[in-house]
Length: 109
Image 1 (cartoon, rainbow, N blue to C red):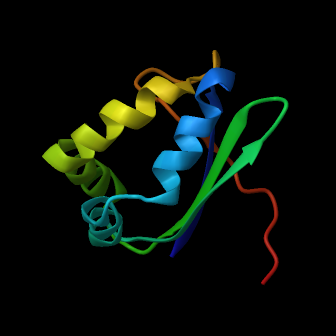
Image 2 (image 1 turned 120 degrees about the vertical axis):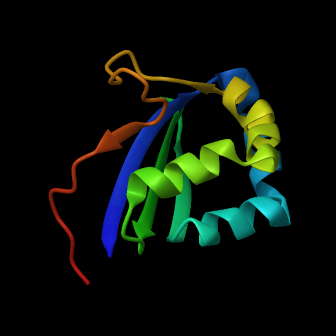
């Protein structure tokens, strides 16, 4: 199991819509997240900085393959057509990165 964290900006004028979308995540998206070996997925909002922080546990053996499966799924692409316009990537993101991945520096069970 690998814990992962990531951060992205959210457009201030889109916060209410983003919250509304995530209050009723489509069942197909929840199933896909589980199918791609992601567990305990949580997104936090930090205002007034307008940052989203996501954290999850990855329980698979091939993260790249699972993320490719997720990205290729037509229902997920439709979901992203609603969520991505709410977000704004950080200026420091790596090439091809939307959410900026974070380094875990501390954990306590």
